Length: 104
Image: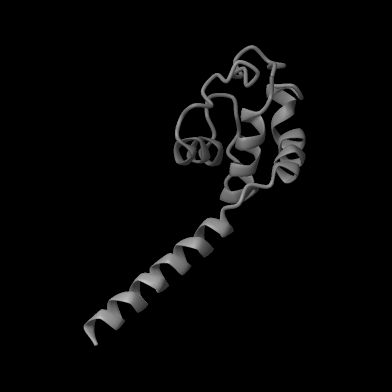
């Protein structure tokens, strides 16, 4: 009896983990649209900054930081970058970050 409950719990854990990962699937096409709309004004369409203070995404400047830290920076704003909290959702920011990491 105890063994069956353990197996059922393990199956439930695996299934919930799989659906959680699915919810955070990256959409690079959406990331490109969001990046082009909200980020390229300062960071450039190809990741080469248009303004001096913006990090260069073409050289991966600052993009190696953990996703959650970068999401918070985008939501709260940083130096000249305005806050995007209430404008972009976490998953939209994450899509744009993954797209930015692909720029050269």
